[in-house]
Length: 283
Image 1: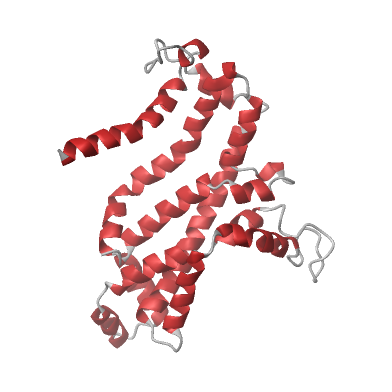
Image 2: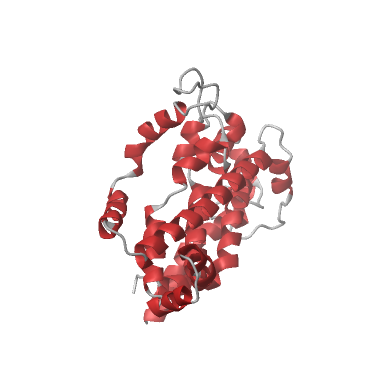
């Protein structure tokens, strides 16, 4: 019975995604038909072509911006989280536990509290966007990729994940490397990093998908910089451009293309995903 219940719940969760995928190649009459149609009579692949070639919807530009931001943030989070996780898990220094406690405590605050302070810090960023050394005179880092990437290069959850995973690695491996003359940086790069690939893959999946789908902050900072708009912000504009019901199939086609990269990243790294959770500190 438990398996049957799990299968039913799984199908119920998958049903909306199937309808979006199916409706993206339907005609307007099929989408609005009563009773609802679940399979198109003739797939309308032209819906995708119409969106890609619409001069009013620069979808390729949105994808480029999202790819640059998501990839840069993911690489930065992997680097900062693994370095901090290694220091908090394997190095002994005064205040280590206090630093870890402070890191965890930052996860209790909602992200909305930091939006306005971070916005003004970026606006007052020295020597960027026409600002002088005191951060006055221009737009600072707001109208650049820096404003989309810099606020997310450090992740408290990523540090926690990497620290917990590295705690499971025996200290004897590190001691043996030190006896062989390896430095801390050498131990980190040659001993620890090959052993934490599952945790890195898990962190990469969550970070990339989270950044790809993040809407609020990109919407705030790209209001005055449309050339930096990402896919979620672009989809909101598409909702305006395709506001009529007859264009619903095109909007659904754009939605399918928007979620495709996230699905590809998950499928590419899924074999590390389960292992990362099993072997990390969640046990």
